[in-house]
Amino acid sequence: MPELPEVETVVCDLRPAVVGRRIERVLHLNPLLLRQREPRPAGELLVGRVIEALERRGKYIIFRCGERLCLIVHLGMTGQLRLVPAGHELAPHVHLRLELQGQQELRLRDPRRFGRVLIGEEEDLIAQGAMPRLGAEPIDPGFDGPLLGRLLSGRRAPIKSLLLDQRIVAGVGNIYADEALFRARIHPARSAAGLGPRRLSRLASALAGALAEGIVHRGSTIADYRDAWGERGHQQDRLQVYGRAGQACLNCGSRLRSIRLGGRTSVFCVRCQR
Image 1: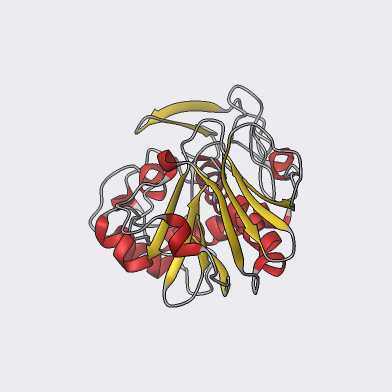
Image 2: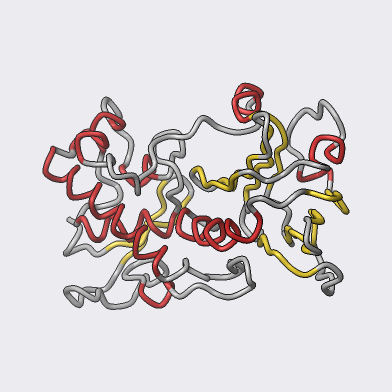
């Protein structure tokens, strides 16, 4: 699933190309991707609106279209959001097509249809339960050890599981949680309650560092992820533990192991992450 670096890459690619453009037509919107109560047809809400801003919040892409109206896209596991010329060959599994001013189309392709599209005011969508109330942004300047400690206060669950909880930390998934815990030398099954100030500061820094590196290298293409121009990311070539179970640790040479936590596989080094 695309995580914060992948979504941030797509947003940064699209922002200069779509902000200020008017939505001329909704050519197609698969109703199965609309995970909300629909007050009005999507076309009525979006057509004629100008995209005033494009933002990322956690793993969500938010097109702000004036008067608090938002088009919000979550890429799910296999979603790809691309800007193409009008008339461009239509690929299979395209579930959203917006014709923009300037003969461009914004297209969402999602073979497995785990993505979602939301249209409305952000707070209303949160109140409906269509969108979660997201936690702290781990690449914000104020994200540090003390803040992470407050977010985890009183929680005894494994730290890996808590990092994946979007209500606590927004945008982190399996890839970058594994990478951050390895950098911070913390075992993924360790209880959050057992992390002192020094380890929390180390983890906050490691998390921000792993995500920032992922953004620099335009995300990790493990399977389906592509940027807004259809290109692969490069961070997968630099991952230190994710997807490397059974291989040698790049730090100490020990064999990396994997365990299941909360239904997710976690890869770690038994020597570096005791």
